[in-house]
Image (cartoon, rainbow, N blue to C red):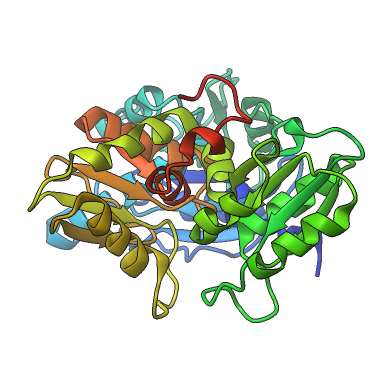
Length: 396
């Protein structure tokens, strides 16, 4: 399997094409990728749902390109399609607004630009169908003239995208905490939700980052941890555990050895650890009848004793000593209105990109609703949150 196919969705650059119906979004996307990804037709409204395609796109690397329905769609179904299009903005790293060459930008294109600006999303206005105008103006930092029919300007569009993205190649899951030669023990209980023969994504990413940092990753199950620590011959620099066995692992790991969880590492890597760490304390204020939203960034087959829908609700009820109401979302679902909730508990977000994870945190902040994540809350419920974030500075 190639490294391209192994690149997780959440680690790919998300490039989305927006515009009104018949602006040529789909044909431009096909020209941009040099593939027939999107259906092209002269009939308005051909694209009825966002279309996603993972690929390698030079000079950008692993990307997800997204074709969206027309932002000017009408009718009851049209409104739903427009809502889907606006949702795509939540995960967009680069927005390409497709307009028609020779025409002024309309209110719909300007709305997308305003939304992109308000969310700090880099954008390019691509004036398509420039083969139909007599003279092609020169582009600037924010726009480019292209023709999906002739291929004119396509390379320039790709180069502009590359210039917009300032890749943070030094971003680490855990490597910035390590030195060459360090030992890191990773506690990985057999997760029923993981496909047979595989580790779940945060575990894979952490192992790879440890190795890339010149440290040594030692992987064991929770029932093997005590013996593993005895066999090492020296204290590990760090122990990282699956959240579900946080309490058990904390009792085994010596107090002078740093301890955290995969979920906490994910919160720091693509979210805001300080926000979710402080949000965990809101569980103490829950009262009978309060609503708690538990949200997962992916969809998977629910197993018995599922962490999000079974274990967390049980642990929260045990902690507060009263009945609270739980609501659940998964995948791309995330409520527009959060005002009815007293607490949002999110997964680690390994299948979401950084843009969407931070968007969800911002939605909670704007609504005044505390937000935390699975591992952070579990550490808090076990009375070990302060210890779990100690490897990171100024979190609590």
